[in-house]
Amino acid sequence: MFKKPARPANFVGPLFIALTAVVLFLLEPASGQLLAYDRYAIQGTETWRMLSGNLVHTNGVHLLLNVAGLALLWALHGEHYYLPTFLRVFLWTCVGCSVGIYFFSENLIWYAGLSGALHGVFVWGAFKDIEKNVLSGWVLLAGVALKIIYEQTTGANAELEQWIDAAVAIDAHLYGAVSGAILFIIMRLISTFGARWTLLTQK
Image (cartoon, rainbow, N blue to C red; front, side, top):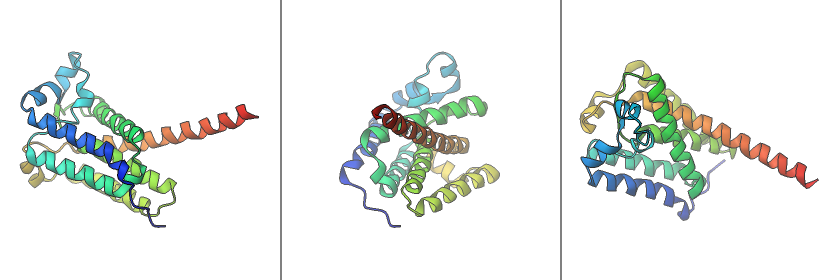
């Protein structure tokens, strides 16, 4: 089954995130010092970094790569990106990614960038395609699963680390993807039980 083109209005959410990331980059180094994921700062009650760490970047190449990734996600799944839904999915995958890092990757002290959250939004979008009987959703889901398995078994790409001037946080990709899957399931359950409750109350 072929996908319908993304409706123009659905670019608002990704554009808002991209512009936010650009503005924060222009405010470096202050924005990075205040907003990047920092385990010790979070332990010192700076909990906003669990969200904001996903919006700052190490350098211009890092920013451009992630903004390009965001644009690619819109091209793939833009028809699902109604503004409230997209922002909800993006924010929760950001938090899920950071929570995963905090509890399961204690050696990862500092983190910045959209890539973890982008993996989450990608997985959520692939599941939405599957829900809509778009066969390419299965291909995308298999592709991201293979990518994550490859990263977890072979490590990060050394050239990419040179480009972004930082270690690639491959665990963030894993936790982001898991967060996207969990979020889809939760949203599907809420929608299903909400619909059933409505039918019951209308009887």
